[in-house]
Image 1 (cartoon, rainbow, N blue to C red):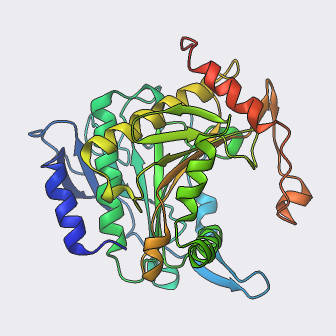
Image 2 (image 1 turned 120 degrees about the vertical axis):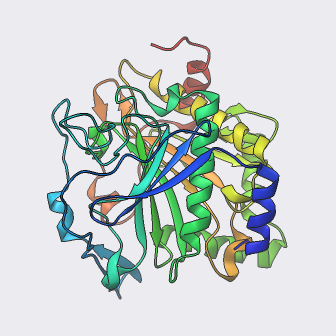
Amino acid sequence: MPTETDHAAAAARRGPGPARTAVQLADGRELLYFDDVPGLDRSAPDQRVLPPHAPRSEVRYDPVQGEWVVVAAHRQDRTHLPAPGECPLCPSAPGRQTEIPASGYHVVAFENRFPTLGGPPAGGRCEVVCFTDDHESSFSRLTDRRLETVARAWTDRTVELSRLPGVEYVFVFENRGPEIGATLQHPHGQIYAFPYLPARVARALDMARAYRAEHRSCLFCSVVAAEEAAERVVARTDGFVAFVPEAARWPYEVHIYPRRHVGGLPELEPAEQAELMSLYRDVLARFDRLFDAPAPYMAHFQQAPAGPDAGLAHLSARIFTSRRAPGKLKYLAASESGAGAFINDVLPEQAARRLREAGTRPPG
């Protein structure tokens, strides 16, 4: 994991960045405003009457699979597909107070009111990150300036959350669409600060460790080199490449890697952050052009863990949709959910070709 000195040096290179204002919500949770420009008044108080925030999650160990499982029964009461005008992520307005006290905002990050993690039993922390106050927008429609603010918010939270006692892994992700279980339509993502190393992350690091021991080089760098020479590349920039992996599990799945070996978002230079965010936005827009409706998708960033294995990691963004054809979704069968044996109905080379072609079509 990068040291405090590394983080400080990276912050100095990035410059002052957008304005950052911390406030406290009515139940004691922290909320942070990240603004595109400085000087905005963020003093509006949370006027709701809420009980003190007290997460009740538990972390339990499965000795057969060797994996940790989070039990968060209180999440049964979380907001689910609210009616129009009742979105808790929209700005507050007279007569209707939401999770964000301000009447307008650029980017906000705040502790989840119904967190998967947090509290003494489980440890860790869960945050929500809203990308815009426009309920009808999407990540693929954000401006360049807003992309910079989102990237700096993600970087800020990665650094701060990795400092929390007991946190081993910071996971930045976004779910969009009721088809994949997203319960809120407003453009947002989440960040989990895990008190353990998630199973798939641990498995990838095991593979990277074994590869380094045999080849004296980075597994992920070798994957990037091999994929760049194949026919599954979707888009490129000077420093990054987006491709459909050879063994894609999902009908349309894209991984974005920096060619330079970096472990996480805090290690990127300002120009690299802008490049990554622009390519990420481009890929999401291509997903939306595949079919006749916006794509439901899951996206996440793989970053370096805390501890001695940090040097094995290689930053990547990974995006996939469960839509395999117009009006058809991929559901996990027993072989996939039960045995972990994925079956892909779309040839990865065909998926890459369709995504390349989607980049030449106008939106809408």
